[in-house]
Image 1 (cartoon, rainbow, N blue to C red):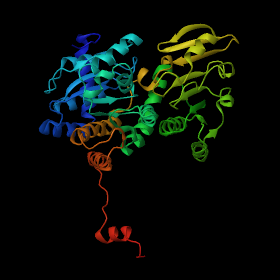
Image 2 (tube, helix red, strand yellow):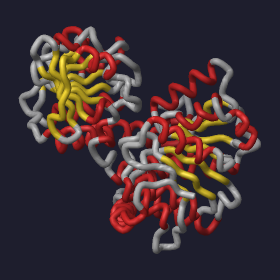
Image 3 (tube, rainbow, N blue to C red):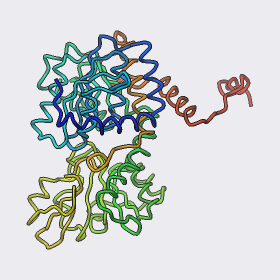
Image 4 (cartoon, rainbow, N blue to C red):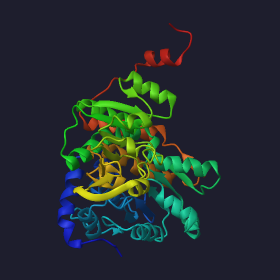
Length: 421
């Protein structure tokens, strides 16, 4: 039985889902294929992804493909209660009611209860975003492990956790690293994060970006997208990094590169995107400008050390909806968006629908691949097959009305040979 905030919100949530669906042609086409073939018939799927409209489209695609779906969010502040209600009620297009355990601003205890509830369904496939379901299965709910065929992981942070588990010999089933597919990280992490992070910052602060110093911590694919969009807004962009190659890349891309210790005194807006904890902490707070704005674009709320900030502040107040103001003992005030949680979802609607169309197309096809190859896949982290990546890219080009060249037999022979000139 679903555990949601208010079923009466379903009509508003259904409108959001319909809007996302009409802008997700890849997933819609794949859904029609799944309806015909029912590859998930008899399969129980537990899903933990940000509970908003694009995720709802994925949930319905898998359900229409025959799966028994049990779904929750992966961040207490990113769940949209109207979307959760619409999923729980069911749509008017043949999509039946789905078991939903999620509501906005859940306490840590409620969030843990929701994760547990979807796993206790007897889940055979795990679709995770950040690794909370997999972690729970391998720590507190180990008795459920024998039912699990495998799963798919959506995020950089989640894949990092899976790699660590694999390295330690702890991972007990195959997990497909959806995040590492080219049609995911090259587009979702770069263009999706780049746009949605600034959507969240701008709608929450209502301040201009042009002319400000923006500090981006981390120059992976997410950091690249955030920095690119900040530059487009007219900001001076500063990159902090621990990887010398990425730091050089940032320099060559035209950005200033320095340590966070130095950047702390220069930044007006700080965005963390590292996947690590304590990126901005007590080492930096007293160096920040009066009025500096901090936010996080990494999965977990540990990149800005909120506990240390609470301890360092003389007082705290609500500066604006979803912005907390902290008065430091040195008299300066700094501001944190969305409690240091994922800013593009805790303060916005997440990635654009067209971007998530690609990511969730890969999710759906990877889950199908998992079912079809359940007896062949080895325990551990599994790459998305190249043919799935290529298929999604071709579908996206076709949906965009674009065509590309193909090699002639002579060209292919030339590229594959070694003696010709």
